[in-house]
Length: 237
Image 1 (tube, rainbow, N blue to C red):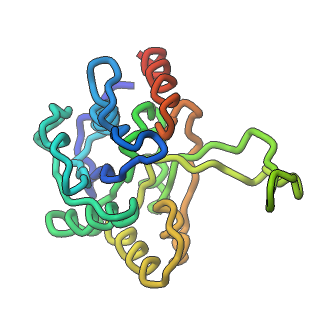
Image 2 (image 1 turned 90 degrees about the vertical axis):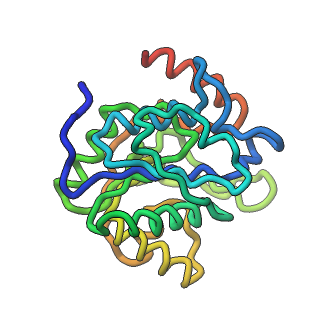
């Protein structure tokens, strides 16, 4: 599928929360700045999103981050930066507030994990098409494949969980800028647990569709995920 050249209306923006410490990956190294094929993970991720006709993309980075603004991102002229927050949700909200000052709250935003560099162009396009066609929020997700066990205490299984209606959420997650900003602000005010953008939207009663993604759209969380991402990107190339 070739890259789309048109600029949609309303416009399409991307947000990449990239201020987290990633302590599960390393106590000293940030996963988004690990190298794959002579580029950082973050550069790969940004390049994937720029396969869409973005109006721009916002990187929410840590206050002490002195790397992000030096990287030669694709479509660098579309890059914006804002300060990240204490948690992922705070970084996303900061980026939404930043965007609301320069564009319409009726524009669409794609929120994508900085350390998820393998998302395919086909999945991105299907997500955008689904959200814009239905005029409602949508996320990439895959059906849960493995048998799930509920373990309450220690290591003893309490029960097997029915997985027939369970999906594993991925990113990007897409919504209208104003709606998502209001959802996150309300959820934070209410003290709700916000693990992704969809959970904030669900909190205020917004409908969210799932668009089936692919299992190779992995998030780099642990050190061995980095080697898996290398293999996936090599295979996709």
